[in-house]
Image 1 (tube, rainbow, N blue to C red):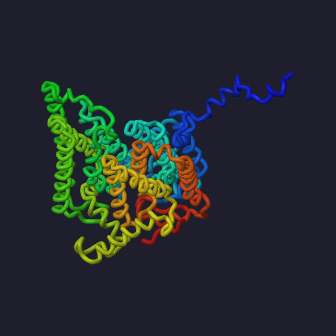
Image 2: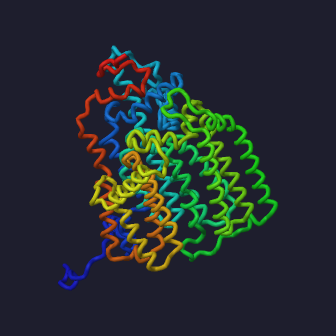
Image 3: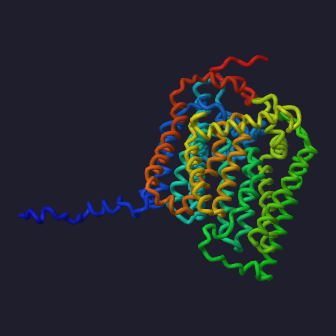
Length: 563
């Protein structure tokens, strides 16, 4: 029997209870570290599991007509490619989304998981149930593909962010913020073109940032080439990526080796060894020349063709040739400025430049998979394409000089609109990354006070670039799907600040603020999916979209279009 004294002494926990307690006990007393409950692998599994659960609860089971924009358009064009018939021009242009979905439907059809994968196999209109089932099966298959894209994007983002900040806990929270951001949470369950484009560009940007922080290495030029390829593919799917490509010199110029100033300089041996360096340079030149030669017909067609069947705008050939030349010069100048600022060996700089050309030309060659003249013209004339869209939403933008009163007034109103959204109070939205932006602004003020300029400058470049691109997005009302392009920039900025400001990780408010941000993301990201789930749409909602499906005489639930 225990004495009173022995009962007052805490007894050690043993057995299964001890193992359970150790598993969930915080590994660190740091308030920030306590926000991450599991290991790196388990955190990623938890994020992906949450995405799958949300997808199944709201999104996957929707009928094909529930999210007609863009589910219906993408599936229709994938059906055409599998017939085979030419893709009808889709104005985003959505090239990769349509092409990859066509391959996905073929694969699922071969496995017996999808009954109809081509337009020629769609049941007749007289068979209303079979007709609807064919479209719904294909649309749900496309939604599964979107979920795969989303999870792959989140995992790649998390791993690259870990390589950038060298802290897996920060990377895990960054991956969570991306997975449950406003745009991602909706797009992983529908067939929007922004998901592939934004994912490809952001992954390429992170690759370049990681390469920049490592200093001169033998593998940096191939990374530049791969990043160039991904950015080109992103442009083929969504022409708005042009603005992000133009922002690259600003986004990267302040990202150099040893951001925290505490690590030793990386070795520079490879690029100082003439035999190896000249061999790498020669290989990059040969690959760039061969790729450019293979893609020359596509490039010439894009820059010398003013119109094509299905286009709703007329390309301004001379203007496009000028702005593409200016963009190439701007990117080249950015590479030279970066090389001078960070003392990159000349041969590495030249090798990286040719690798970038090679990646771009190889990306352009993807248009040959299912060549479509209208898509080529749209890709090579992105400003005219976007101007037509913006003109529909804001007629004052259609004519006049970019510096006239109407355009300047719109720009001022757009900037004010973005600022109002940042306050959240003046313009509430279902964009939880706004609160991460609040954190970034406050943390940047701390970094300025501590005079950490090598941290402040890249963070400011990320945030200001996101604000500028959001301002341009106001031309179409800064729709929720556009958040996928700029929210990741805010998350990367937050990760850099947390990784390089120890007081933030150990502040007494860090744990409470972190829990609040996690909760806000988890709840706010599901608002739009739940709203879509509760809507009382009827099949007639798709009747307004005949213009995008010329080969569909009519849907069973819609009146026949007027002749």
